[in-house]
Image (cartoon, rainbow, N blue to C red):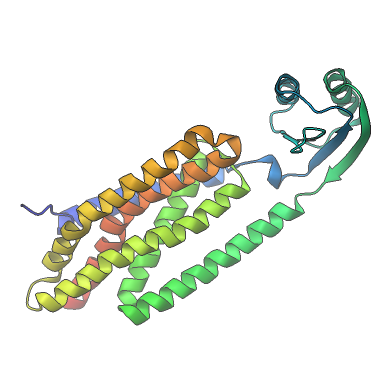
Length: 290
């Protein structure tokens, strides 16, 4: 079977250019359009009702319709027994609060308690800070691990590849203005582990083939290695995407940012491990050889 040329000089330069243009577009979008943060990242008003009778499906749908029609970003949650409901919106003034309460109470019927709370996005800020810290620590651990297991140039190549995946995923969320929720942050952390594992598999095969073909040119060895793991990589990607597709269809609004981020990150990771990480590693070796 004829090998696909993934790492020829012209091929590498072409995909480096494509990758760079893509990342520049993502960065420009982040600076110009920003991210579409969910209500979890914003301050707001929380209205809590305790009801005499449980809500039915029609009432819940009507509550959501009213709240969504009045506010672009909002959240409606119910207790498991359907006798409590929480409505979260942007910060409300007195007029907005009275109007919303009036509309809701036409549907809710009798209630035994009602609370109004002003919410600050402290939990989301804390989550974001912890996620950033976790990401930095993960990158440091990966850098040390890959350096010890392989070489420093392997580690740098893998980290650049991971950065491409994470920045690309965030950038696409900015470009298409998909909502960024706490589950999106969880997806980014998941991708760090998933994609670095794929990179290690490719690098491990390269290292094995270097031992088998010590006199062969590094570009040929690396290209041979990618071709050898390509089918396995594609099967893994397809299987993973098929496994999470039902969650995209049936998971609702809460899981959607998580699943979309996983989809994008897995696809970008597959591209990155071949054309960014492996391509960069090949460049390092070519420079050393020169």
